[in-house]
Length: 386
Ligand SMILES: Cc1cc2nc3c(=O)[nH]c(=O)nc-3n(C[C@H](O)[C@H](O)[C@H](O)COP(=O)(O)OP(=O)(O)OC[C@H]3O[C@@H](n4cnc5c(N)ncnc54)[C@H](O)[C@@H]3O)c2cc1C
Image: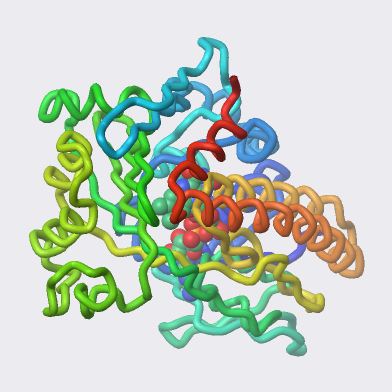
């Protein structure tokens, strides 16, 4: 039976869901708020795990294309002390395909393929249980109804309120992101420092991570413990001897505050901030660990909308696997009653797995941005292959 299915959001969760439905010849309406495919920068690099994101790509029939695009060498990981001493330098084996990296933009294009996304369709509200099904209202005043509405619309989901009152809360840790272009030609010393994959330096309650993307692009993440309004008074909140508020849109002011925050760290490490082109402020929010809800017929959630957790390398992976699994369950459901049973069973499976990962990533975040920097090193020693 052909169910009327809409997925709200064209991120990793929504596109994987739609792509697997497409592979099974089941129609799906993909509704995305962004006005066009390239309306905003797609973001950094993602490592896709064999047992999560890669499994999902296999279900979408896209594993071979992923393997051709991805960067196994990106699994390399180097940890430096704040004085620049190399503490660890893990290199992947030549045949290691456990967690290769792919640029988010490349992954999005791979998943988009033949999908017919309705761009510029921001959803404002989802109302389950109307006579004709689940009602979806759009920002432009239009509306439509479906048998199943899947909320894959990320951290600040507009679908979530239809099933759960939960909202994300601040973790107490903020991330400021910057980037470097053409690193191999413009900053060869930094290119050598970063290596083929990622490089991280851990200090007291703060860290700096640099990650190589394709084409010589590098993303740099400065993470630190701070109140949400840390930028309003750097003296009181960060001990930086700067009373005036920081304008987060002022690139040079943010750069100089970050350099003050990481003062005393090795000069080559601080060059990552000195050469960064723009700074994006990302306070880290999470949903409660083990977030679940009483099942609502016709509506469900995937990915960050269901279980926003700290960015420790699994959010997109889980989002994609959930998308693939829900699509497979839905195509195997012959009638309307079966559709609801399939969604219920999917939710149980998603909650159990996501709950385990939410605990792991919350504990991991505490150790990566810790008063004791040796905690971060110990965490890497536990998870990196010896
Ligand atoms: C700095 C950083 C690094 C990360 N690194 C990794 C990593 O290496 N590996 C990993 O697995 N995860 C990583 N993550 C986590 C990962 O980014 C997320 O878990 C993942 O993007 C979730 O996918 P999603 O499809 O659920 O949501 P999103 O990627 O947020 O996609 C949601 C989509 O919905 C659209 N949308 C939003 N609201 C509406 C609306 N009202 N109507 C219509 N459309 C809407 C948005 O425009 C967007 O396209 C990282 C996160 C951060 C912040």
